[in-house]
Image (cartoon, rainbow, N blue to C red):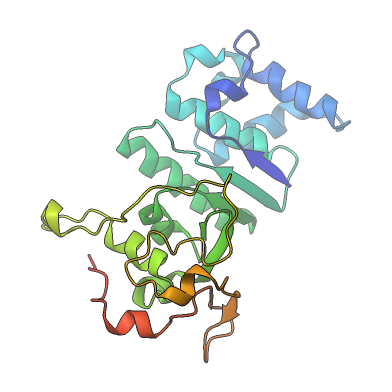
Length: 240
C-alpha cells in the first residue's frame, strides 16, 4: 500500500535532490539498490517526466511536476493499492486534468486499486468506477458511478450532484445544501444529515439509519429511512 498526500511541496525535502529522496525511500524499506537509477527513470516515465528531474531540487519544479514526482515516489515500491488524498489541490484546471489523466492511465496500465479522496464530486464522475459518499465520518451511499449519478438514494448525494456548476445553468438554479457542518461535541442519535436535509421527517431526528443494500442491486448501498419517499417530492438532479 502506498499514499499520495495533498500538498506535494510539504511532502518533499526542500534541501535534497529528487534522486536522493528516492534513494532514501529505498533505504528506509531495505530495497535492493541494484540498478536503482533505471527503476527511478521507469517510474518517472509513468508520470511523463524524464530523468533530468532526478538532479533537481523540489523548488526547481512546477506545482504539477512536484505532484508527479510524489506519484512516482508512491509507485517505487510497486504497491497494489494507492490512496490519493486530494492530489490536485492548488493546481490550475489544465494541470489538474493532465494529472487525473495520468492517474487513470497508471491505474489501467499497472492494474492498481486506487482510493481517491476528494471534495470535488465532478472529478470522481470522470475517473472513478465506484463512489462512496461520506457525511459526518460515515458512508451514506456507495455504488457504481453511473448508478449514483442516475439514481441517488440519499439526499446528500442528490444535493451534491445538483450543486455541481454546469455550463448554461444559472447560478440561482444550482442546488445548495442549507446549514453548517456537524458539531461533534454534541451527542447525535438520529441521521447525521437530518439537520440539513430538506426532506427530513421527525423520525429522522431519532432513528440512526442502517447502511442497507438497494433493491435489485448488490453493489449499491445507502443510509436513509425515507427512501424512496423523499425522492417522490424531489426533482431529479440536473445532468450535463
